[in-house]
Image (tube, rainbow, N blue to C red; front, top):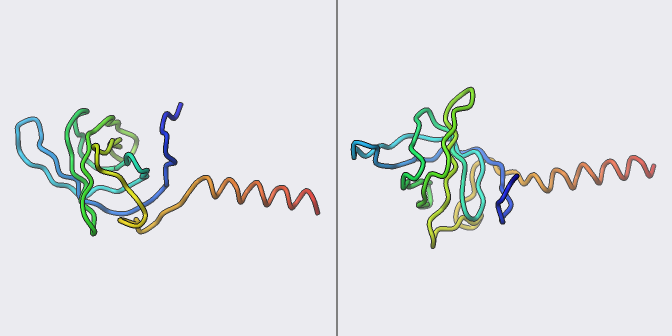
Length: 120
C-alpha cells in the first residue's frame, strides 16, 4: 500500500549522495534518481546505506536533505527511500530531473485512447 500524500514522479537523472557511514567517514557516491515527490525520493546506487542515516542529495541547482527510510537490494543495486527533512521540499521550479514522467498523465492518456477507440 502506498502511503504517500503527494504524487510520485518517475524520473532518471544522476545526483550525488553524501552521508557519514557507521565509522564516521564521509561518503559521496553518484546515484540514479528513480522517482521524486514533494516529500521524498528514491535513489538507486551500488552501496547500502543504513536506515535512519541522515543524507544530502546534491543536484545541479542545490541540495535536498533527508533521512533513509528504507534500503533494499533489487537485482541491479540498492534502492533507497529518502524522506526529505522538514523545510526541504522538491518542486519542478527548483529542480527538473533530466527525464521526468507523471504516471497519472500516462494513465489518463491511456484511458482517453481506450474511450475514443470504443466510441469510434
